[in-house]
Image (cartoon, rainbow, N blue to C red; front, side, top):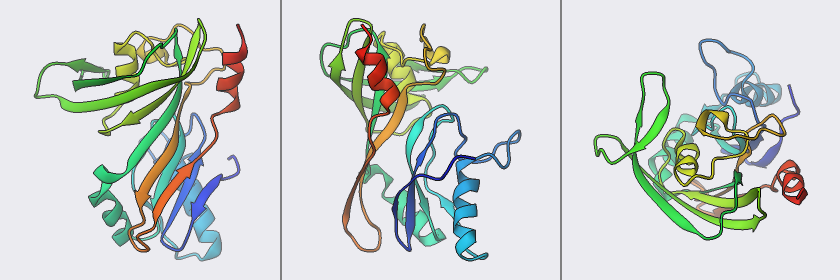
Length: 216
């Protein structure tokens, strides 16, 4: 287990920086090596009866900000207003992304659980905006805002524009130089459900992404 990276904490909620290649919550195959278990362990060191509630999750391969609530009421308050939470990611993409854009599609899933874009309105509507921050011929550092939170949304949409996320072999990447997918949930902005403060939380761009950009 890595040391828990706490970005924000008060008596109502806790926001942590999830590392790459760690599940947010348990699956049939993996019960203990999860971010949820790490946060619960941290809380129960303070008091054995403390509980933790998952508000949202990130893909195992994605790093970045995850919110946990310290009560069922706080969890529900955040989830009930989830559409108002502003969520920004930073990604290293293949190729040169020269201008900002937006992508709208309906996401569906194959029998092998591969997500793909379609025009079929029976799928789940997905809306993504992106803008390049730094580019060179091989890679581009891009800020991505998701206006819907669909499974694998960013991964599919970046593949759709022919700039897959570096290291995302499942969705079209040809390069995996650091043996991880270069996608991080970097910023969250939301109204605190109790204090009503406008919380703006942000973590640094992973240095590995920047180092890859510097290589010509």
